[in-house]
Image 1: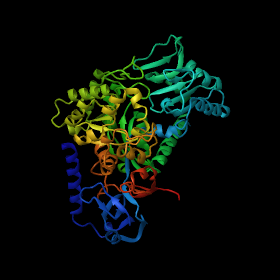
Image 2: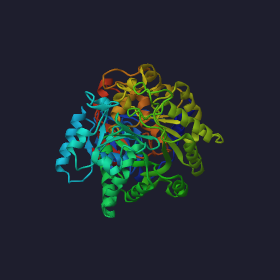
Image 3: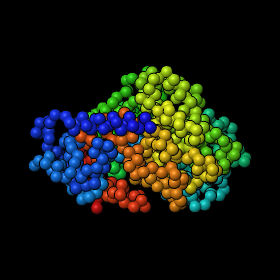
Length: 576
């Protein structure tokens, strides 16, 4: 319990210090924005609940009763009447892919497809309006969510014949919902140079039929075989076109996030080049939400050379922080890429894929320590989580206070029970996604078997009770960036099939809100400025249409963000 109690104590002390500080000038005690007549849940143990919030500039000025806050209202103060609605700290997306979210808005949305034939139909429609030779990209298909299996199929996945028939002159690449596999047509296979003789790349698989021909499914690192062809398309754009495209992606992702109450976003891995874009926009005051960025996709040599130069905290008035490295040791369960201790129930020949060897990750751990960076490693399978914990334990053996490093395991989906206490002992943050209990639970037993699925999957309660800092997010664009379903997933664990998935692992609503706010702030070293409605912190606030802390549990998913405030500025208002 030491980790979480330390977090509580830090924030309570900060709140008391601010509230007891000498009075500022009369002018600074006038609110620029006030939200009154609400049910305010602060996620601050010093003042857990209130009725109103006063904001001065980009900071919280005061939290209290409506009468108390109205005394801080001046002639130029904007006053918003919450009319009894819930007012909470802005949601912090704990693990997402910011530019990927923007890209998803420009691609075919396959998340709602109910069959493979429906996907083929959507591609055919796109081909009719696309120039010959233009790439067609889509995102979000998942074979376990279709109403019926495709025919023909290999290992439950389609083959490319029907897709290639409707797109003979356009290369097609369709990303799996997990982001850990893609499906391509014959034109894309040709451009990627994939033949019957092409070997599987390390950490990846070109799925083949009985004759040895590629089916079109590329698992894990095999997805990157199409990268050179796509890079040639990107290289054909002018520098101005590339910059305009990047800015458009930032804008699209921000619009979606703000419309769902998100004020900060943990970007789980991007390049130095994209960080340059973020920094330029932050300097111009044009980042829509606050970004906490993890460096990913760079060589060890480049990181060793550039990490110190790129490290920044709260650049652009608190909108950009870079101080983490993101790695990935395995793939996703849905694509049979998660690294398991025992074989898959539905694919007994496989225990998944190791995308990075522990010895390599050990070198990254040493690099992170040397440069003072947080290390965040994707691990989904039970073996992947154990291997990462082993690396962290070895790598931090000489560190007196491991918890102060705030190293993270991203996803932490399937954990062998003996490893739960290791998270706590090593001070490792479990960066999780509650939404997956809703979307994945119906098919997890197919992959793992019923007993292992229930014993190891999404151990929110076990981790929390062990004293582990548990956070929440969506892994967008794998899932919708909307935090409400992910909050509901941690609280209710009601899957899409209506069944409760291991109810003993549920969190309370107060715990789930903390996971999405103050715990995420802690995981990004920003608990002193964000994560709770505490005087002196950034004025990042959300007003919800329904009180998710009080309404019947079944009503939680229907809540919407009515108002989103970032740094004291109203950035989103939901239309009636």
